[in-house]
Image (cartoon, rainbow, N blue to C red):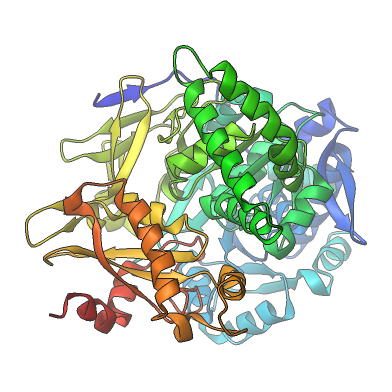
Length: 598
């Protein structure tokens, strides 16, 4: 199939903007908890009425500070309650939010604030404030800086004391559906980040149709979601706006180091994350079971869950014997995993990278279905996702209702719909390259099956062509190799080379546990063990599993373990955890050459 679409399930308002949602919530659900914030280590609910009042108060301060309609206001912070509050306050002042990753370098901050023409910025910490202060002489349009940890909200409240509710409501009504809501700068895997202009219409079309199609996951007064993705990322904004549109209770977590504890205290009914989160849950549970001497039981339970999930797609369903085994393991293993995930949820939504078919079947098999989706900043996050009642594991689902997915002659995925971005800010050339007659060229390669389910096979520009002329999509095998507990990242190489090879980094968290179990010296690092026969053999198993997903010509023949992980600080991955392949290839050119030497 070359093209597929679904009718819209949500009618985007002909006018109006996202601030209409918080006023509607206060009118229709005044005492319903729509937010939750951490106070003294405990979750404290915020009703729709309270949230609207707090947003208005902050918006008054912005208006008093001279923020005009259409002004760009930057926001540099981790994911926290104040992010959502300030985001809606910026919109309520008639302005445009420019999110900046809290891990951004001074050079990146300067580029985004300068390119967007931000007149004000709200930062989270003294570190962020210092970074902005050092750039002030290079940002002539920047007038105001507020710091959340130094009383930004209190300062805005004091500044706006003379501004009336009526003035805020007047400002709130100025932006139309087709006006910019935010300028989200792409992660920048190559070159400088481009500012994607997303309108209020983009978010209405995106979130309205997602909530309508997944309504059982967004029941007002019953459902809740915990946001731990970066709020600066478009996927994080999707969670924020969808929760408000539904509305359902939203909690924010700024640090995922203690994510398991946060899940168990907040107990969300819905989790949205990236594949690495679900890989960590699986690998941590398996490692704990092995440490407790129950590794064989866990592995048997995992195989049963996968078999059970696969059988759900067969005409006769699971056999009686498989049902009995599944019931036994539900009590022994699966119930404990549900507790780790908060104990109340049955669904998760995953995006950002392929989850992997085996992991998808594992989670569905334990009764926690991960609905895989696909999207980009330019598509306001999800442009395709698996419906809750018709999941096809191994695909990223059907198009967002009201949108169209088309496969071009060269296999590129093209998108059309109200959710697609308006333009690249200050970059008409890039806009013209990406948008043709209303169709966005994603740069991704994919296929559509007979039911309109999309499968992504790789990036157009990342396709490797070996010396033998074989086209290889690296994502397929990389995702399978990376699913191994020991592997942090994998990058396949082989363009114009005689065979496919790979660079592999080791997950530091699991390395210490693995080293202890295999008699290696305490504190051993990847740099010290990269030539160790046992570690090489363990990674070889991961590579073998990856090779099972592809043809012999596409399989990884050799690999090298690198001495350290790829990090944002090292410049090898973006804030949204995408590999900067050109940077890795340049910095590890000697390692790549070593793979083909001799």
